[in-house]
Amino acid sequence: VWCSSVAVSRSWKQISPVGTTFAYRMGAGLVVFNDWMWLISGGRLQLPGQSGASFQDVWRTQDGATWTLVTSSAPFSGRGFHSVVAFRGMLWLMGGHGADS
Image (tube, helix red, strand yellow):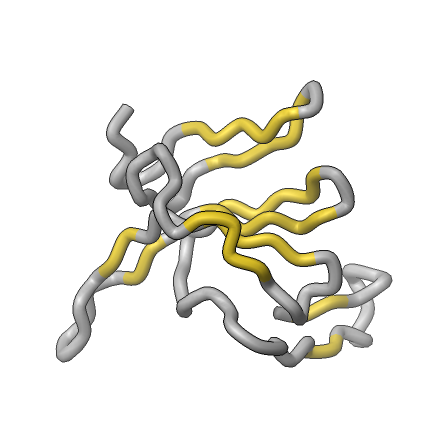
């Protein structure tokens, strides 16, 4: 996790995780909702010597360092490269690879 107060600056700094955190992944959904940053699902490609994975978890943080597992078994199937938005007081998840519907 990296952060900067000015996205185009060279002042990005890496945030070291504290405690338990999510597994390495790509294609996760990330959105800000109710003053929390939410990381939803994502996956890992199958590479030589490694197994692929499609995560069904939801994590949240308020500082980018301390992450809390909200659920390891969301009601939707694991997926990557999906869209997540905050709209009208709810989180909306749409599409993605591995999506069941």
